[in-house]
Length: 140
Image (cartoon, rainbow, N blue to C red):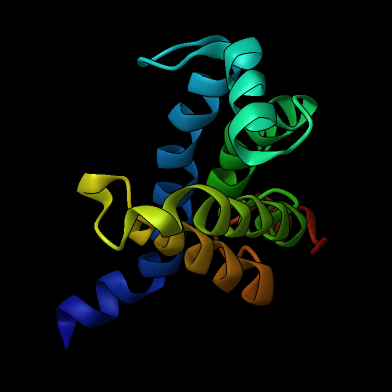
C-alpha cells in the first residue's frame, strides 16, 4: 500500500513524459536526419513514392513527432497534440507498418500502435495534475 500511495500519482505523468520523449527522436530523424534518419527531403520522397502522400507531409509528421512529443512530455496543449500524434500513428500503422506484420523487429505495427493508443489516452484524459496545462489552468 505504501508503494502504491507514493507512486500512483506519478504513473500518468511518467507515461506521458516517456511517450513524448521517446517520440522526439523519430521526429528528429525526419526533420534533421539525426539518429540514422534521412531528413525532410528524403523522407518526403519516401512519403510521395511509397505512400502516395504529398512530400510536405514529411515535414508535418516530423513536426508532430518532434514538437508534439515535447509538448506531450511537458503536458502543454496535451489533448490537441495527442490527437495529432494519434493521427500520425494511425497513418503509420496502416500505410507503412501493417504489411510488415505485428512485430516491431521486422518493421511491424506493434510500436506505432502502442504510441497511438498512449496518445489516444491523453487525447481523452488530458495532461493531468502534473502538466503545464494544469499549471496554467487551461485544458486545450
